[in-house]
Amino acid sequence: MLERIRIVLIGTSHPGNIGATARAMHNMGLGDLTLVSPRCEPLTSESISRASGADHIVHGARVVETLEEAVADCTLAVGASARSRTLPWPMITPRALGERLPTELAGPESRVALVFGREDSGLSNAELQRCHAHVHIPTNPDFSSLNLAAAVQVLAYECRLAWLAAAGAEAEQDEEPHQPLASHEELEHYFAHLERTLIAIGFHDPALPRQLMARLRRFTLRARPERMELNILRGMLTATEKCAAGRPSADQAVAAPRADQDGDGKA
Image 1 (cartoon, rainbow, N blue to C red):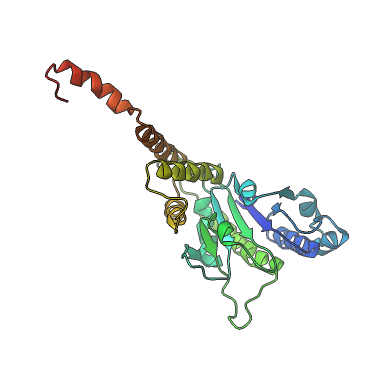
Image 2 (image 1 turned 90 degrees about the vertical axis):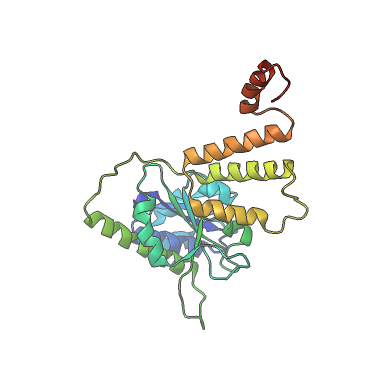
């Protein structure tokens, strides 16, 4: 379970924080580290020193340009957030996150990403909207600022507690075959398809977006669709696009000959 939990750091500016994060991860049995557009050189003497024996994680860290690349194969992305947002998003505690992990990672293709933002500004609203849920560490409100590696340590600890609890529990057999959840990449393709279709039928005006797409994202991510369910939704969107373009849908194409055979001109 721990091998399929990924720590994602966005825009990290201090190599020491990368090393300290690697140490926190290795303490708790995590090893998958991805860096998104780091603002510093990840591999330095300071990052290796702060890793304190976990430098193999620093050496093996994957560096990508965007959050989408970092979580493309993940079925759950959780963003660490300390601020309230104008559009409420599902918010969970670190303990609740840990309790969800055995179920979230039950499928062989499941993978969880824990996403952390920049030291000075955290995650942007756009980045948070690409996460299924937000996790908030309930710190002292009079002094709530946490060091990046300390925040990773708290969540990594909850991940390990969940793994220990699952390892000690009796395994249960699923009555139904496991259906893989849609990946982050598949969801992003769906959202692009959805927006394109809504524009085509005149339901969505990109010049006056308000919060339509954000709310539809929240609704869909909360539902946690399976890959098959997402394929059905995209098939519906494709049929809608065809109708909007004046092309008959499959049902209309089949029904048309039957109407002609009536001979009375009535459909």
